Length: 298
Image 1 (tube, helix red, strand yellow):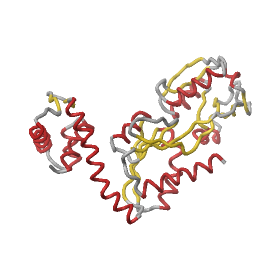
Image 2: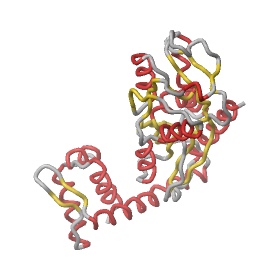
Image 3: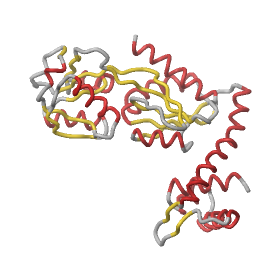
């Protein structure tokens, strides 16, 4: 059995579409269907339940999917090991990142990386945090970038730098002229939050709870860009990473206030699949993150 057939099934499970899988692999829909049927016949199992408009992966299909991904990793690892032996920093580097890191921290890092390693092609996917971990586990990404990295089965995580958290508000707000505030000053303030399932929201909830602060939540969003817009529209406040608002601070659209408390930082980290070999391109990107991370915290 060819490795391409394992990849075909993985693509089908990911896309949920015979037509998209066919296009991705440069074959016809009929060929996709025939190869999947051949797999089922070979192992005498039903891998997918077919419907008129969609399908679902069966429990046997889930088992096969996990094994297929491991086989693909091992197969692709042969080329990786050759690269490692030659120590050539080249090829494609797939990065899955949460929006805040992708929009703010990542661009200057990529600029430096591309200048140093012009033979590497970074491919960036913007995701919610849970999707980043899933991409890495499914080998859809070589590396993941998340805030508040968490240990999870099958992956390794490493904190590489920290962002200082600050209060933001629009000009004319009661806090706008303050240089710094104690967390207690935020009690009762109209507050624009992140959505409850996001790691940054959970961390901020804990910070405010420990300080005995209760805010009036007026909006919830899933990314920093809409949080900033909400602060302006609602004439409210929020707490966000300092680096994410520098453009608005410089233009005068928002005001930034330091927080008078220790350890008000948002850790940012790398996620990678535990069984995946580290390519030279991955190694150098991780090293650059650590190098620039030390500069940010200095």
